[in-house]
Length: 113
Length: 111
Image (tube, rainbow over all chains, first blue to last red; front, side, top):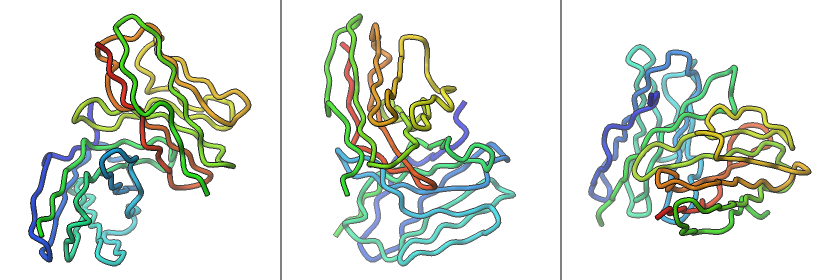
């Protein structure tokens, strides 16, 4: 049973505009969330994370929002750049087993020049 | 500093054959993880080593899969005998404290 879901397999955005990638989870015990970015033929690389004690975390052009009551998080990229084109994976974990990550199925972002 | 490396990058085998995947973690990282992504689906946790000990192998699909990490350095994941549903990309990751660093993956195709 998939506990982290990314319901949009793909997203296309114009360069300079905002990209919003969404992620839902079912397990209320998850208290730490991460976004990974993956280019073709490479492994996922860490992008940004958020703890459940926060509802927002920002790092440059990337902001992650967490809505615990809705069990939903989103990644905002502003402004989007062609180099952001990649597959983005949402992941979640718990404080009591921090080494086990639960990933979503990914969203392929295409930023058009 | 070298990243996580995996070998081979691709492997095509026939159903019933044996395949061994190798992962070299970042030097000094005690934690090593194996994950698998079946076509278009989620990246699924398989198991976690701390040095040479299996800390959590709850994600291993069945007893056709055997992971080892002798000496607490590199790790191997053997699939014997391989089945069609074993096809996918196998990722290895390593960490010292927080944050997992992933290798490029091994794409396994079972025909």
